[in-house]
Amino acid sequence: MRVKDKVAIVTGGAQGIGEGIAVRLAEEGAKVAIVDLQLELANEVVNGLRTSGIEAIALQADTSKKTEVGTAVDEVMSHFGRIDILVNNAGYHRMAKVTEIEEETWDRILDINLKGYFLMIQAVVPHMEKQNYGKILNIASIVAHGGIANQAHYNSSKGGIISLTRTLALELVPFKINVNAISPGTVETAGNKRFLDRYRELVEKQIPVGRLAQPRDIANAVLFLVSDEAEYITGQCLSVCGGLSIGMAPAV
Image (cartoon, rainbow, N blue to C red; front, top):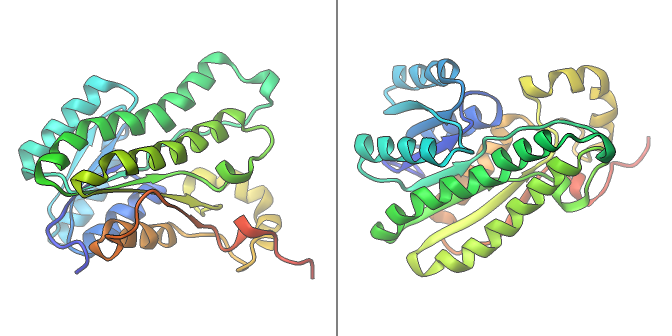
């Protein structure tokens, strides 16, 4: 098992990509703490893991709030005694033209998608420094590399994640803490259902490998980067997008 007995925090782990990551890490031996606003859904995931003999807990927190983040991390430490892996995945998304983005919406997206990552990292790093070991994985997006119209607030938050990842990789390397990121393409999740109901065929035709990503595709990449197999990799951002980040599939 690639992360046997490691303690992993997964934010936004109650559904979608986060759930896929939590389950995949658990399959490879990790003890999992899911931090999510939706406690009921998080508990459903945790109960499923426990039936498989996995040690897991669910914690409710708004990761954009420092006090709630601190409480959640304290509870993880109290329960497990250490934190080896942090997967920052919690996110918020809205589409709007730049002239129509409300200040409140801009702030909320940056608070959750960027500030929330920073607050989680700030809370767990002291524990990782003490044990001279840690793996931090931030979920970004391929839109951070090229942009897409009507998502200035979302794209800005994801670009910030990549910059944060690279900076902290340099800052934390003396403590044997690896910091990396993954940029998913279009992933088939419940949150994307409305969009995919309208545009699935068009999106799939653009992806070189010819299909949407599944949460497990992202989770497999996360598993590698938080395992000791990736000990020599830090400050990197891996696009898991079926080739979309290098170009669209040729027209048939």
